[in-house]
Image (cartoon, rainbow, N blue to C red; front, side, top):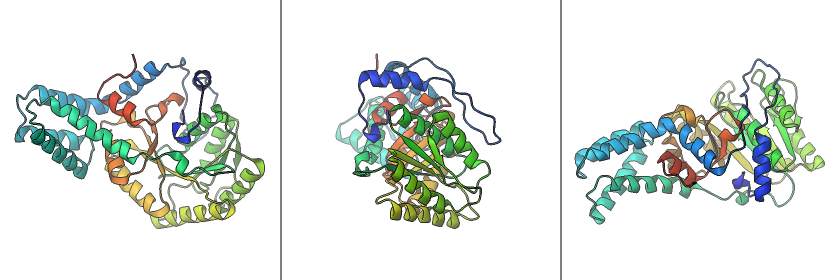
Length: 355
């Protein structure tokens, strides 16, 4: 739970948090869609692993199962096998450059280790994918403030599930005993403030808002004042996902970061980009643009359960070297998971680490 935040829990704490997170909360009806939470029984680590594996089913079918079929139908490792493997990896949205790097590495290992059994390639590929993800991982304490609130600025284009992700992250912090302040700095999108306010009410946390169309930087500045005065542990700032042009959006985000930094030294300590996994390579392009503008320190990847192209996870890690903090694999609160590279790879390849 929030391992990237380096929060320590006892076993009892974890069980209580999991139990409390499964309770259903009534949500007022609003015009903007808000993800609902279903009531579930508290999950053991084993059943949660099974859930992750199940929710990655579309990607497993397009990547791992197709690889298994390919390897089982071949008696030797040859050029034809590599050609077919290339097609499988690309269709899983690993990206051309990443696929070429994977295959080059595989060819070298086949030659060096004198591999002849095609099924041996599966382990080689699995470990290469794992290496991309683990190499991008960075401990969160690198951005943690010595004193005062931990400020997270959340960015991303409209439609990726940004505000819903904020609501679910807020609940995780709240259940771990942290006081949270939400900041509605997305003042341009219709109902954005109202949607975030609903999440604040659901999680019973405070929120800073202004009228629609207000200066987002002014909202952020006021929030820093309130955060310091109120001694909040965590501040989560929602931002716009679209303005009149992309250039204006990036300039607005830069301004928000400058304003927060002037009021609170080091803020924002985390700039988290929310990406929709179903958009594939567009997600990589979005990440590059946001990273160039404001310097992304962490990622939340949503809707992995809805895509057969989950290879985007490894591709993003390899190309951007930005750690993934959370992955979304469904609508329930437990389906916004703290990202664990080993768990993800093992679930994808169907190798159960929990018995």
